[in-house]
Image (cartoon, rainbow, N blue to C red):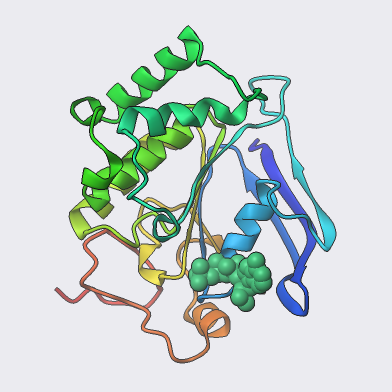
Length: 257
Ligand SMILES: Nc1ncnc2c1ncn2[C@@H]1O[C@H](COP(=O)(O)OP(=O)(O)OP(=O)(O)O)[C@@H](O)[C@H]1O
């Protein structure tokens, strides 16, 4: 039986007078590939940040469970929205990746251990970034930078990998690369992708959650059309055939090349 790794119970989050999330209930399972979609401002980033413990709930709870393989709480890895990051920051790929080891409690004069360095190199090699290790992050393409951000999240060996709009700033081929990578990673961990774009509900996704302040749907990736309209309103362009990432978004939909 599938084990839940994160349980969101009656979660509401307010920023002053703005209600970002209202009474959200969501169970996320071990090794599930979940895509959370919803319109801009629908509360997706807020939900991720609340799960990560970066934002306190106004009401409700979030339980991060122990994994079935260990007696420890699941570790969460986070790939933030690309557009929120400053690529001009003078830091190399290696330095950015190894910073992912900062999940441990450390003091101001922290030195990376041999184990930290080994973990960084293992992840760099695994993601095919070896030739880029000495590059400044400002010299990377969008797709390369996104891969480096994934590496930074993976270096802490997370049980859950959360990605906020991972393909928003990359071209179609890089987007496919990222989804292939996520499919591989899904064999080992839970993957949660957040996007405002309905077309990212790819064939790699097992389940979808539709969020617009409250949760309108959580289930199979064959989304009923009504759910999309309910979540986004009627002004939504549901299918983009420009997106080469394979998708099986809606029922009763014919592919047109
Ligand atoms: N720090 C903040 N202070 C005040 N309001 C905020 C803050 N962060 C988010 N909000 C508001 O909360 C709501 C949800 O925002 P959030 O960023 O979670 O949505 P989102 O679905 O991730 O949007 P997008 O797709 O545009 O990234 C929005 O109305 C937003 O303006």
